[in-house]
Amino acid sequence: MALIEVENENIYYGNFLAVKDVNMNIAEHTITALIGPSGCGKSTFLRTLNRMHEVIPGARVEGQVRVEGVNLYDPNIDPVQVRRKVGMVFQRPNPFPTMSIEENVLAGVKLNQRRLPKSEQEELVEKSLRGANLWNEVKDRLGEPGSALSGGQQQRLCIARTIAVKPEIILMDEPCSALDPISTLAVEDLMQELKSDYTIVIVTHNMQQAARVSDRTGFFNLEAQGKPGQLVEIDDTEKIFSKPSQQATEDYISGRFG
Ligand SMILES: Nc1ncnc2c1ncn2[C@@H]1O[C@H](COP(=O)(O)OP(=O)(O)OP(=O)(O)O)[C@@H](O)[C@H]1O
Image 1 (cartoon, rainbow, N blue to C red):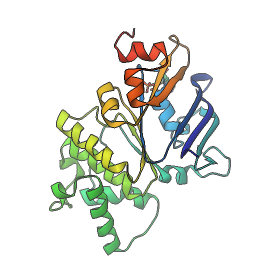
Image 2: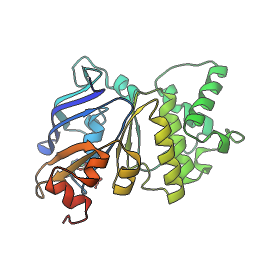
Image 3: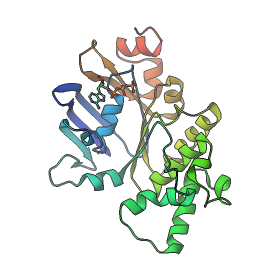
């Protein structure tokens, strides 16, 4: 069984059907990249994988998103628990500016109201920062504000904050788009390491990045302006970039799109 199974999912903002009829399976310990032109619903779809979509008034979902066989949209499922299990990293590194590096790492854990003794906190901070490949750069300045770090370091701090909560799945919405090439490579390397412990779904505008980091790639597209976005195909990344089965995918990856 796939770790994530999406079945006949329609995604709405009020009456507007933004994405229609998505079916997708995602295996454990893989990286899935979602690509496609602007406005086709990649970010919208991503946010339905941890119930962040419904935070927007009027936004709703039809169909099922199952994680380990459990439908996240079942009425008795607590969205807070879902978001603990399915963490998210955003486009702009968003550490809490007034908090120290250490407090930033613990912020998610504290929001989830887990009280940890000091020694366990220290252990968790070190483990999460090591996991995010940031420990060596910050270990002597854990009390400094998170905002004192470079953009790439801030993004790795946000990843540390996400993994401190011990999620199973990490969603990343264009995590490198605000980063310089060196920081981007650092985050891409980190993703490869994280894959052994987590399952990652990443939205990226950068096709080279999708080709570099992912095992599977899903191509979303819009039939026409005003029409809902849809998943055109999802397959092994190598296949999508060499021999996709749909013409629309071929056109997009070869730059013939639009
Ligand atoms: N908060 C919102 N309220 C209403 N409509 C929205 C909202 N957010 C996005 N949409 C609409 O949903 C559709 C999909 O948008 P979305 O941002 O998911 O696309 P995307 O593929 O991630 O685009 P981009 O690559 O530009 O980030 C678009 O038509 C967009 O205008």
